[in-house]
Image: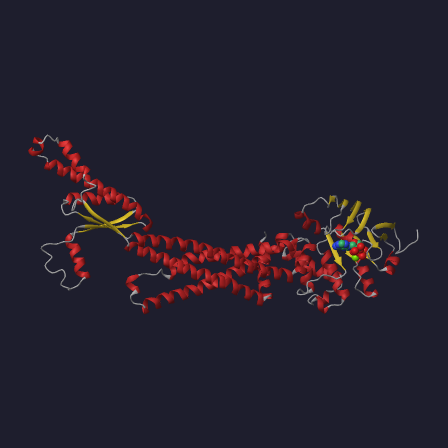
Amino acid sequence: MISVQNVSKIYENGAEAIKNLSLEIEKGEFVFAVGSSGSGKSTLMKMLMKEVEPTKGTIVINGTDITKITRKEIPYLRRKIGVVFQDFRLLPSKTVYENVAFAMQVIEATPREIRRSVPAIIAMVGLSKKARAYPNQLSGGEQQRVALARAIINKPPLLLADEPTGNLDPDTAWEIMNLLSDINMRGTTIVVATHAKEIVDSMKKRVITLQKGVMIRDIKEGGYSDEV
Amino acid sequence: MKFRTFKYHIRQGFIGLLKNRLMSVASIATVAACAIIFVVSFCIVLNLDYILEQLEDTIGISVFLGDDLTDEQVKDIQNSIEKIGHVSDVVYLSQKDALKWAEETWQNSGMLDGLEEDNPFPRSFDISLDGVKYQKEVVTELENLQREYEIKIVSEKAENEFDENNKRDGVTREEYKAAKLSEIDTVNYENIGIEKITHAQKESEVLVTINTVLRVMSIILIIIMGMISVSIIMNTIKLTVFIRKNEINIMKYIGATDWFIRWPFIVEGIMIGLLGSLIPCLLCWVGYDNTINIAYEKIIVLQDLVKFKTGSEIFMFIMPVTLFLGTFLGAAGSISSIRKHLNV
Ligand SMILES: Nc1ncnc2c1ncn2[C@@H]1O[C@H](COP(=O)(O)OP(=O)(O)O)[C@@H](O)[C@H]1O
Ligand SMILES: [Mg+2]
């Protein structure tokens, strides 16, 4: 699914965010990327969604070397990758329903497809009753559910979540993580960058740990700070 | 592009326009101000051009004919004049016509009493041209024609005058003719062939200059107004793009193509350009018709002196031009102002 080979990222200001990282993620895996603030988690996620170019190395997703694709091809790559952020990034002027439907309009789905898929996804994230509400009428957890629904509405094989629970209280964070786990059960490969120590520890998923841009641990069914 | 996507873009463009209502109205108004200046100056330029054209018609060339030309020769000269390039019309004025014209001009002043018997006015041609700028060229041709006739008539005369006396003096017919012809430039032959060519040289030169200046000025004006409009539309779109930066960002993460993101802004820019040019065009049309009517009513002399272009004559031409420019500049302004925001 994802093959990262000898990737380094040095920003224009000289900050070395990722140092010679190599990583394989299989189809259907659920991977936590952990590490202290500034360890390079977001940089890794951004390189995977081609928002940031690696300075060195190759990244292959689904057989495509994304460091080699042209600008024109980026939208079609992104349609195969769902993304979720700490700050939700919903459109405040659109309702829950419209925010989710928007992701289908952008890829020119038919109105029929939209009418069929959107309510189902909204039901899946448990927001059927709030489909007509606007983002500012929702709690943080609910907003993140909408963002999740939007991220998976086009059935991407890969879902990237950068600190999806960073703005949420622990209980709500658990709900979102469980939802991610559900989505993973249905076959979507998921990479989650997070600080949520307790959740990572108890979910027993694969955990990779970054420290100052170096991957210092990669453990199947690991915890946040397992001793090796 | 799929039809539903097309509809989506149009809708989003309108939504953008309505959401930032104040700014949309402000930019439409500014573009409209440019369009008004553009349209009004065009009305002025087109009318001045039209009036110049009418004035040009009055600045013709007159050719006065010698008294001894026969009617056939006059006909012959008329044919020759009509063959000269850029001559649009040749009107023959007989001595009677000339007297009648003079009588009408100096009505009952007694100046012309008793002239019927001994009419002093020469026969003449009034020549109109395709444009005042050809005057010099045509006058040169007429002068050549004049000289041609002088030679022809002088040699005919010499032919007739040559007689026994000359023979006795030992002069041959050819020598006599050559001597007479050599005098053409020195002796003033009155009443021979084409007597005189008159034209308003100064006036025609002034008209040609005014015309050129007008053309250059209108081109400069179009460029300046176009540049102002583009910068206004660009600023508006830049602001809407800025306001909707998050939305653009989200669209990019979802996998929207650049064109999908661009289209609503282009629609918005086109609407600003289109409304900003359509509204002033219609207002100016109505205003123009009224102004012309009032001008004709208030200044009665105008009626026979000059004619203005009608509203439809001007606006059937200028409206499509303005609308096209508005639409084009609106689209171009949008495209260039969203370019750098698309690099997410
Ligand atoms: N756009 C950027 N320009 C320059 N330096 C950056 C940029 N983004 C991140 N960095 C630097 O790269 C390092 C890794 O940052 P980041 O990937 O955001 O880490 P994390 O998400 O783990 O907190 C940090 O030292 C940060 O200052
Ligand atoms: Mg981060």
